[in-house]
Image (cartoon, rainbow, N blue to C red; front, top):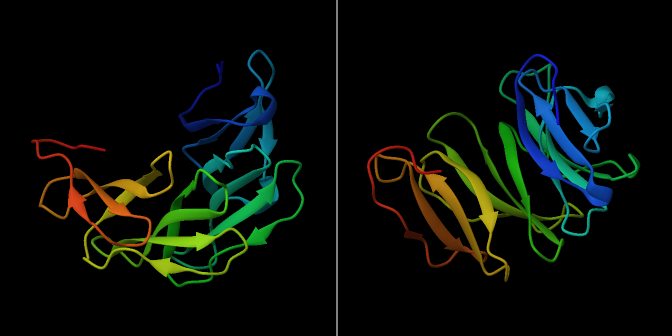
Length: 184
């Protein structure tokens, strides 16, 4: 569906069969298959990790702060481009947002440097931020279970990147895979 030069990353389906994606330089686009991609969130550049809410009414994303090194915060915006809301204000980087199936919470990765990335959950109104993991490993790519009770993610807690899961309340951490190579 795209034919222009450069890498395209993390495509996501949205409402009305729209696809969003970002390029390797954090430019973001929105399109319908067969149409020309349209720039998205250009005034917030650089942006990455666009994810649609389950009902397709909102997007969550990470916005890097160009005035600070190693700093990014999570935002939520209405599909029409209004209602922008900064969710996180923490030092370091917050990225890899994933919506809960009910659209009320977002799980994300946050921290300050490699090996210090932890999982957090926050309500979409910015309240109720809670840290789920405390293990000083690199965790990324969280995904909710369909019932919203569990979160799967990749982590190098066992000296190799494996798939782990934890309860949405922070309980029941356990390793799911144990194989050589990168499991994500």
